[in-house]
Length: 340
Image 1 (cartoon, rainbow, N blue to C red):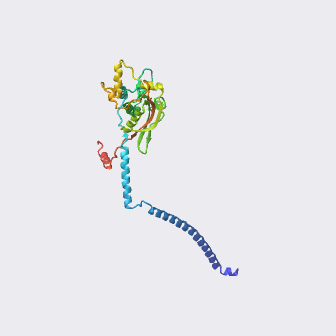
Image 2 (cartoon, rainbow, N blue to C red):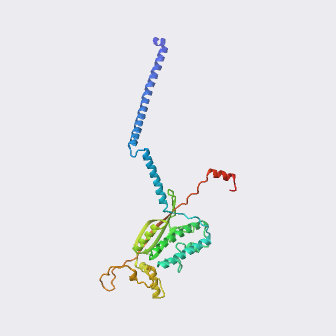
C-alpha cells in the first residue's frame, strides 16, 4: 500500500491504459463483425454482377439497338391493334324532339329491313303494339333527362348495327335484345335491360358496352352472323354463346310465313327471302345436287330444325384522343392579347 501511495499517478495511468486496451479490443471485434458482413454483402453483389454479365443478351450496344427496335415494333403493333377499335362519336346536340325523331326513324328502318329479309320481330310490350327495340320507355315519356340523350343515342346505334348484321344473315326470328340501363327511370335486370353496367378499361382507355341478343336460325345462318361480327367496323367481343334446341312451337312460329292475300304474293315473299328473281325456277337457281335417295313417296329424309341462340356481346370503343397541350409561347401570347 505505501508503494501505491508513492506511485499513485502511475497506478492511475496504468488503470486508464488497461481500460483503453479493453475498449480497443471490444471495438476491434465489433468492427471485425461489421467488416465481415460488409464483405459478405460485397461478395453477393459481385456474384450478382458476374451473373448479369454472363447472361444473354448482354447489354452491349448491339443488343441495346435490338431492344429499341423491338420497342418500336411493339408500339407499331399496339397502334395497329388499337386501329381495329372504333372511337366514341362526338357528342350530338340532342333534345327530346330530335332524339325521338331519330328513334322513330331507326325503328322504322329496322322494321322495313326485317320485313325485306323475312325476319320475324317480337311483339311489343303492350297488346297489339310494335316492338321498340328496348326503347319502350323513351317512346312513352314526353320528357327525357338531358344527360341520358347521348348514351341513349349510342345504345340505339349499337342495337341498329347488331340488328342489321342479324337481318343480313337472314335469321328466322329475333326473340329479344337487352342493353344496359341508362338513367334512373330504367331498372337494371328487367325484361329488356341487363344487370351489367358499362365498364371501362383504364389500361387501354376504352369503354365496354354489353348487350345480349336472342334469335332463332339454322347453323349456316349462325356461321354467317359470326363472320359478319368479325368483319364489322366496330369491335365486337362475343362473351357468351348459348345454343338451345328450338321447341316445336317456336320453330313453327319462326318459320311460318306472314299472312298474304294470294298465293302469288306468298310466292313473291319466298322469292324475296331466298334471292330468286321472278321467272327463275328454284331448280335453276340452286346448284346441281346429288340425286335424292330412294324412299317412300312423301318420306322426309333430312329435316333441320332451327336453333335458339343467345349471344352475349360487348362493344369496345376507345376514348377520344386528348386535345393537344398548349405550348408556353402560345399561353404567354394569349395572356398578352386577351381578345384571342
